[in-house]
Image (cartoon, rainbow, N blue to C red; front, side):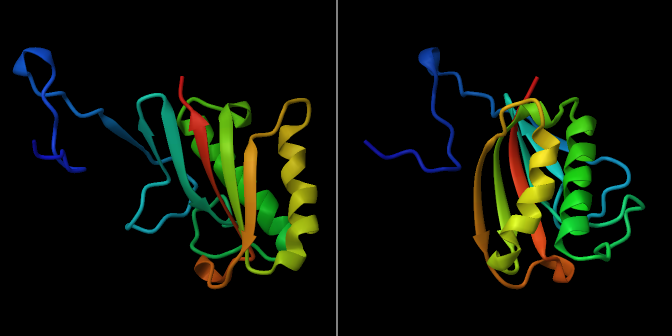
Length: 148
């Protein structure tokens, strides 16, 4: 019996092929984006948000000035715009991954990050340092949300 590869469909009972789960692309106004990715996609009951950086709400492809604090605020505001376009809010986030250009910025990033979850349990989260974030950003955050 041959194994089913990741791009093959499996037959359901009665020999009918399973329909692939539809993918909805979520592209809100005011969120900077490169044409090589979508800010978020909804698949079934999950919404996957691409990594967001601290660009201004004008949609310009530049990072806001002022360091990791203002960048984190702009990043979280951009995540909020994407969530709103998907009909969701910060309470719907289930997992976020934070990428920092310098792990020494963890406390400054976290000081702003936690303000978006006041009065609610925050999502699961990982944080790591790496180099070469887009547009020279100091922080990038990607998230997964439950859909509605």
